[in-house]
Amino acid sequence: MVPADTTAAWQALTDHHAALRDSSLRSLFEADSARADRMTLQVGDLTVDFSKHRITDETLALLIALAEETGVASHRDAMFAGDEINSTEGRSVLHTALRSADPVVVDGDDVVPEVRQVLDRMGVVADRIRAGEWLGATGKPITAVVNIGIGGSDLGPLMATRALRHLMPVELQIRFVSNIDGAQLDAALTGLDPETTLFVVASKTFTTIETMTNARSARSWLLAGLGEGAGTGGGAIARHFVALSTNAEGVAEFGIDTANMFEFWDWVGGRYSVDAAIGFSVMCGIGAAGFDEFLAGFRTVDQHFRTQPLAENVPVLAGLIGIWYRNFFGWQAHAVLPYTQALERFPAYLQQLDMESNGKQTLRSGEPVSYDTGPVVWGEPGTNGQHAFYQLLHQGTTPVPCDFIGFLEPEPAVVPGLDRAVHHRLLFANMVAQSEALAFGKTSAEVRADGVGDDLVSHRTFPGNRPSTVITAPALTASVLGQLIALYEHRVFTQGAVWGINSFDQWGVELGKVLATRVGNELADGLDDGPAHDPSTQALIERFRTHNE
Ligand code: F6P
Image (cartoon, rainbow, N blue to C red; front, side):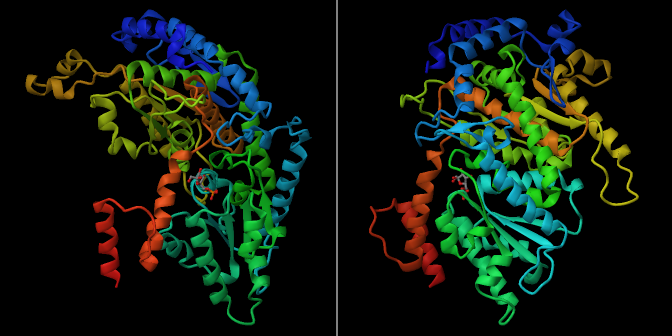
């Protein structure tokens, strides 16, 4: 592993940045009428337009050289081969095996048949639920699925069930509970009937405090609601609880029959697990066949990432362009702006994928990094974001590179009689317009030409030169969603590989968890044998205890 800033390409990019810093997207487009064509690439159904970036052919060549010098391709091959690239946890990183059509050997065994076997078991249950054949303890069909999980055990399935709602039976409710705040469980259970509700306890470790607390409360609610004589106890849990986990012991201890557990493996990171058993609630929505299409989408992009030369490799280029802005322009944020309400949780999903993976300050060697790593990732669906934070995108002092994601056609309407075409035209128009406005802005001369008085010209001038990628696809299908997720997974991978960090651990979340457990115990019983808290923490603990005495 070579620290990125010790490479010849890094130095060349530093010099190149000094030369290119002041050039504009306007001039780049004027100089090259074929730019949009040349810089638009295809991967599967995704058309990815990189032309509105502050890059030239030379920039791309230098970024590719950086990828070569930092060993992106060999690190990628090591991941696909099952090497233990998650070095701090001694694990392989094989989410790609979850959708592989080819054998993937881990410790001498091909894991793909086992992956398929779990998917098939999930498919039988999911399709029985959809067909009204999975009956609760009192003999009624399940009409509501409540996924209890947090982080990767929530964000992926929540995002995907929202995204693919148009492919799901309207009569099946799929709800999500993640927060330890009982308000969310309360809201999720509102209006549900215990007799027709199935809980899906999703937790890789089956120890996460939020999930286990919510699952225990859900179990009490269920047993109280079913009442005596209605198949309560073990029988009721077997019909109303399913577990998704790597921890069979923990699942059994909770009281869930391991026959109702869909397992996955420690070589699947939580934030990379929506295509593993953690996707069960998605499968309940779109069925086993729909889930296969979803996996096929991932596979298309995996294949591209694995085989295309770096210079034509869409996730690699997306990652490298992000590095160009983060490390050479020094920009701190990255916005993801889906122009479909269906992807309303996609930015939140990517927040975990990107920030938990690449929010790191230590090289894989254990040395501190000497350059910036992962940016702040955020976003909202267009056009809502336009009426909230786009002001800063257009006229704020620091540019934010944006990803626009749009579709040529809307999802089919769920409600009969609703014509979505007119909405969709305007939605798509807004996306195109925003990308154009960010890139080309409006000069003071153009503002004056509109008849604006001198006192307002500077206020109404748009600097432009703000970069974006525009990703389009014909429609939001299960396969296209899989393609989009895999595109971002491999983008994150590329950046982590260049930065020389381990994108697959998350030690940064541990300290808060340990302290929360300790403080929680103190609030419950007042006992604490740990080191003294700081005065501010101590005061907060006292205030809570006094208030609740
Ligand atoms: O605390 C972070 C984290 O470990 C995430 O990486 C993970 O997705 C989440 O917690 C939930 O973990 P689990 O699936 O084990 O409950």
